[in-house]
Image (cartoon, rainbow, N blue to C red; front, top):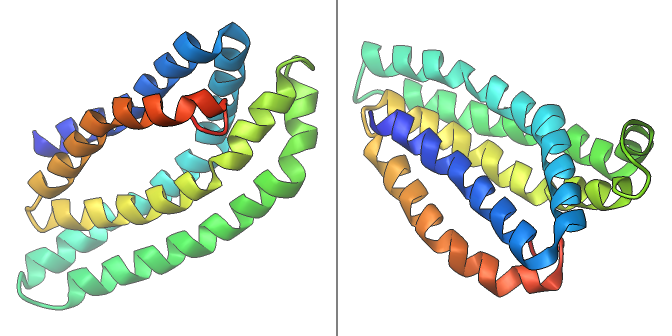
Length: 173
């Protein structure tokens, strides 16, 4: 149950941010943010989270073999290194190549804002890649409450951060 609750809390943060963007910045900014985050979730976040799913199996097997051994932390370290390696080409894609794809796929009045949202989300991708690896390792070590509490804190503080930063426009969101 804590692992499922943790995932639910994690995805609610994006929903709350989208509500703040729509309420404070208007319909056009909401469309730009929604399309930008959808593009980002499909082209980047899904790849990173998909690759980190391998840690569910690897860390669980390592912990099952020897709960006090080094194997689980070895898989965690390798997973974090691989996630950094995967983030680098995705960051390059968002910086240099996503413009043509977004401009081709979406309405010309919304596409530039959506591109900016996707490009500004690269630090979020790097941090999510690392936290996803850590969360999966902790879940395999029967410590699922730690990521759940962290996501509860993030969800509780999300409205405060949104109030502080959405006045800057989409850059703040």
